[in-house]
Length: 258
Image (cartoon, rainbow, N blue to C red; front, side, top):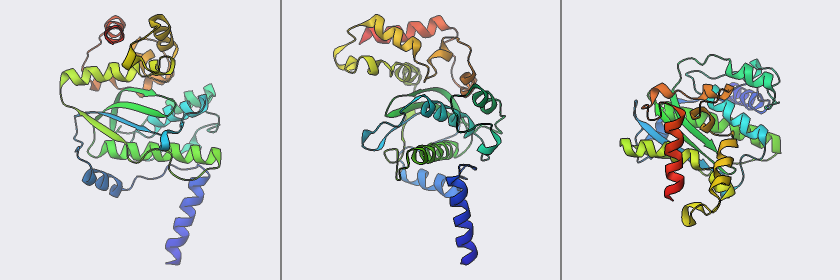
């Protein structure tokens, strides 16, 4: 009993110091699968999302957003990643850290990410499960790591996200293609909060804002070269947008449709 307690205490101390990633236990994957109506399956596509508890802001600044984006990459492997291997891990905005983190080779990614978007109080992901149990493990791993970072940096306790992440199974080509547009159009809400209900008042402003918003995969589909492009594995998804023009036409069609 004393040995077990000592091991648990050591794990807690290491976690608080942010030296190691929390190891994903198989029970998290099993419990998640048992309690969901949707059963994740290899090769299938899913829209995943979650928001802050009580709809609180979960991304308060540039460092928060970049930390989250780096975690999407670093947590997507069969084995846990040691953060202390990275230089200046606490400075998420440093070009040295971003280059070093994204230069790491991730062994056997457990999901493929096709699109993502960070909003002030929630996030969206479009993923394909490439390993059995991959989605549950990936979501548990990076959300735990981000919550630990957020809580320690703010000296707070408790849950950051609103319960378990939500998931929608993309079972048709039409819906899967729509999800790409839905995720990438989310930032329009920041400048036009009621655009879905009332339409967009200033379309040029909305288009400019999308073109300048770096916390999604929008830039990557425009063909803009950047380090965070490494988060995506577009080869695991249908080639709906073979070039930036087809992508832009799809986005503008939805903007004009509403």
